[in-house]
Length: 270
Image (cartoon, rainbow, N blue to C red; front, side, top):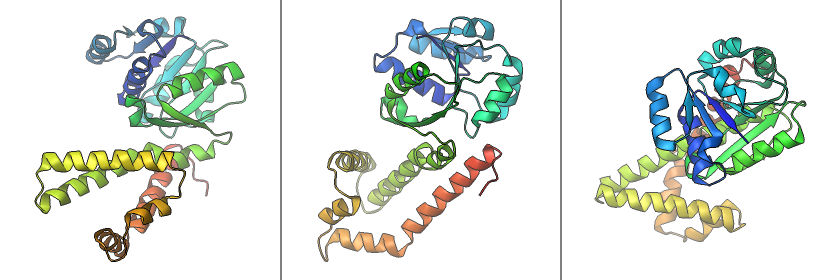
């Protein structure tokens, strides 16, 4: 399978890094196409993939064409490429908010997949959600799964409406977790721990907690209760978080991100 990346943004680079790092793809099967020559030099030097600023060359022998560009330039890129994808080529978009119908009409091509990956993909721990048009074959869906599983886990949604919902969780979620980690580290420093030690404590605690949640099969409330002794330090800290409205503010953040995702896609539906 040969894959061309149109644009080499940070998420596109994360995909390339994961695909090569997991050994699922060889460098000579990947082509990065960008008008930014400095960016191409960086990508080529780091990953040894083929690089070009010629879109025609990138498309010519690629079975999958990944659109890794900013939403604000999507319309121009699609106008330039309209009618240039051939039957059997799969357009895979990771452009935030861009709906299947928008891409199909913009490219004049009906074999389209929409994916929302996230940044942990660069270390093979990503969570990607995706959907596809009815014109996408089972063979092409299998190819998409091969790509996404090299980056971590994947979930297919037959209904596109779930993509914007998942964007607010898995797409934006790493930023929420990083903010919480920052807050924990700053609090640790405030009570007297050296910052380097605080970073190690928080990072490993988050890693270990996520691993238990993934592997134990227990409800998160059960896991929380296992750590919480009556009248103990954890109970005191949790009471403070609950009184501070932590659950409510996280829910508000997710809802705000979801509404923004719909707005980016021009979807004002309730």
